[in-house]
Amino acid sequence: MTSLPASDAEELGPYRILLDDWISCAPFEQLLDMRILSAAGGKAELQMPFRYCLANGGSLLHGGALVSLADTAAVMALKSCVPVGSHFATTELQASFLAPVTSGEVRALAQVRPAGERCWDASVELFNDAGVRVLRMTAQLRLARCQPYDTPAA
Image (cartoon, rainbow, N blue to C red; front, side):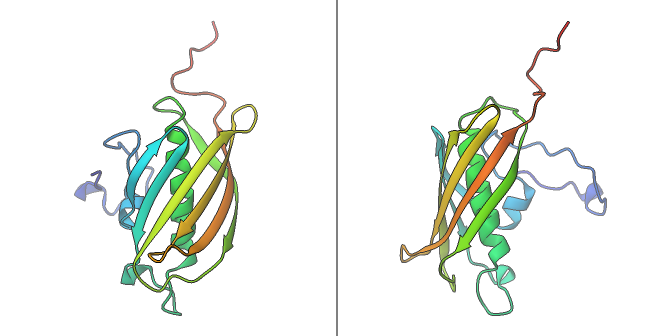
């Protein structure tokens, strides 16, 4: 598990994050207590508990936490398809909130597919403990033009 060195705890960045593995949780994902259950072949399954600190003023799981889980699931699905160390970003996403989460665990199922040069489309669904779909998200992820493994032109 990656943790913030005590000497950097008060710094405001920039940071260089070194993950334990290519497909593993970054500090923000650890803060939300996300767990990667599987990631292979363009698909990923993640889980996140509803903790008190993730509640909104209405005693529901905060929508930002749900979208973070969905986006992270899409990222892990993409990481299962691209070379280790690839640079990419989510460039757009659309989320539909379908049901509130009041307790328990939330499970994310994500799938990505190529959608043109350097682009990948993602679809993600989140489910509560009872199997009720609580969020549907679509997103586009884009690989950076220059990758750390690219050979510079001579």
